[in-house]
Image (cartoon, rainbow, N blue to C red; front, side, top):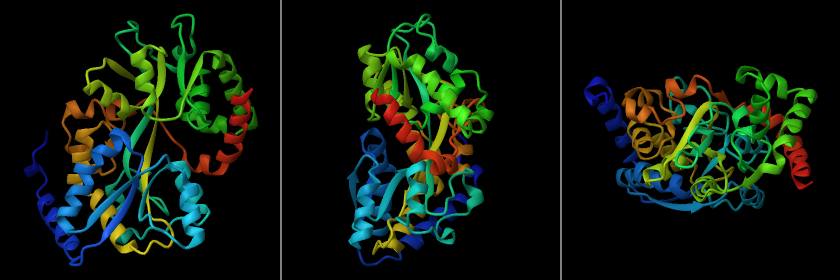
Length: 349
């Protein structure tokens, strides 16, 4: 790993951050909402405990499954008691359009140029990069898949396939399995013919699909032998591997996305929420998170500081991202409702 000495301004920046954070002399409680599981567990030593130590404030953690309906109810009732909420990109932008989240004052968060390109959003702050990728159990599958076409090839690779229940990711994957280059996926998917093509491709695989909805399910399915391959959050596979399971990831055609912090509209602790979010974007917490679970940092300096062993498991490392697809946030904001409705109707048949 590159040493701290390679970044002469880093200690000064960290000291300044802690000085600013320590300005909160009256202890307060900040409620942070995350997705739980191994993902939430590594946030505690990486983000929450260091922030509490630096500021004297207490962080209370709430776990949820991304139900923005709860945020909407709070905002409409003007009874907001969640201060920072973790969101996937699609939910963030739809919620932003619906007025559920505060607009981000980037002067209080970070320099946009210090972050990966999709991290700065109007109502959200991308703090970590993850991938939806094809995972398999190397103890059970001796010939590894190399493309999404292999995911569809039930003759060469007999058995069930795990897919997350929803249109997002699956439509992109179906088009790549049908021969569409990753760079052309959203151009094709943006047309009615392209959407029909994706659903037609999903038709081919439908008898062999085992749906999943919680991030913990794909590694469980793979270990049990319920599926031969499954889409999965890459960090969940890494966590299972650290527990001794011989699970592997096919990076070709993986779909990159970010998770975002957002502040519910009307939070009475907006200033403290901004301070917390800013802290999680600094280099040291970003490195600490990434070294505990294989999700990539949004902070570019943190990414550059990591050793090759750590980089080998990250979705946004140069090697793993060269054949990946970046999730188009605006596409899913504009088309998500209609496509999810069509998918739900298709899946129920």
